[in-house]
Length: 143
Image (cartoon, rainbow, N blue to C red; front, side, top):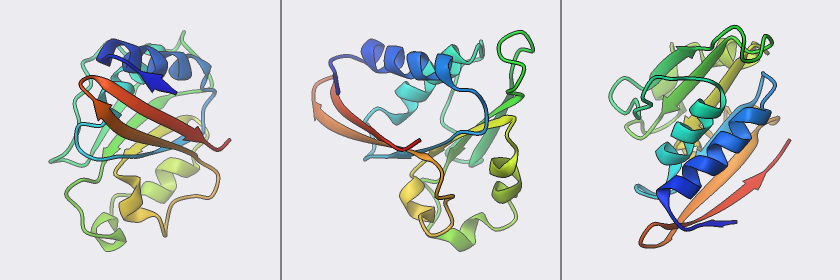
């Protein structure tokens, strides 16, 4: 699909966030400026998160507890940004396997291609492509 503005990209994320049940792993792929963080801002809104979503580029991971009344089967949203890592060895010690094995978590991983060897097979791959201006092409595969 193609979104023509940041607002449309966020709205798509929000729609998807509204439909998540817990246990989903979203692997996001795309160049800088392709819309990944904008999409995740909408996704977080769809999950009921009121906080401003910033890409955790320097700390790699942010955890957002979810409101109890939103979806009782979901407890946490994890936003992971792997822009600064070189490969899978750089994430040792983060406890990602434990985080993504908990069905009460939703995990979104920006720059997922950097850890493709260790990503779970059961995931949703989302590819972002800059078209021009604010227009983005977004392709969703999986689950």
